[in-house]
Amino acid sequence: MVVMNKQHRSSIDIVESILENLRGEGKSIKTHMLYASNLNTMVFEKYLSMLIRKGLILKIGDASEYTLSNKGKILLERIRNLKRMLLEDDEGDGLVDKKLNTVMERNLGCMVKVHGWQGYKGVSGAYYYVYTIKNSSGSYIVDTVLSSEPDILVEACIRMLMISTDIGVPAILVVKGSSEKHVVMDLLGKIDASKIMVLSM
Image (cartoon, rainbow, N blue to C red; front, side):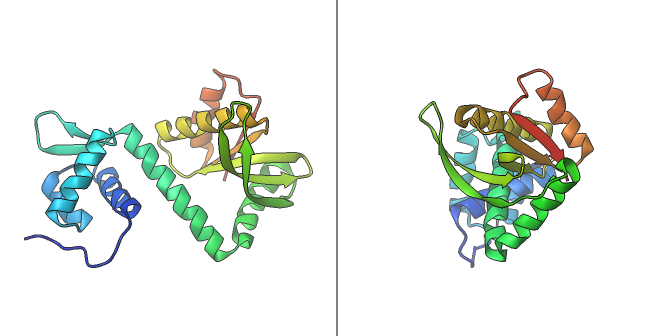
């Protein structure tokens, strides 16, 4: 029996579905992954081969079991963040403003005056499109990580530190709670942390 996908989904939706299933299961056999993805066999095999080739999914030994790699976990988090950004745009800037103000006021004692996505050109020549806020203290680039996975937290921290250094704008990384903040602060204690601030929700 082959389950056909009756509703159009983008490639990103399909990749997210496959990665999310593996994240939830921990490991899974190909047949279970096929049914969970709601794709026909030929399309599923194409996506599975691509995800394995890119190192996002790993095959466990000689068994027909698969698991999500650290690289796959990071990609899944980025997809979620992108979708959350688009959803917030649909629901209105007021929702973003309210969330940021709550975190900023609690941690910094000041309110966000201006916020939105802004393009920057770094001294390296690279271009970045980053969420930016402005308040009485100045301008900051901001990223939010809802995952508790250490690898994802560390990757987000390093990425923001790299962008901040290149464009000369300090960064704020917002994480879920105190345990996630501890993971990031432990990393920052080993490297230059002067350009990044870590806040918890």
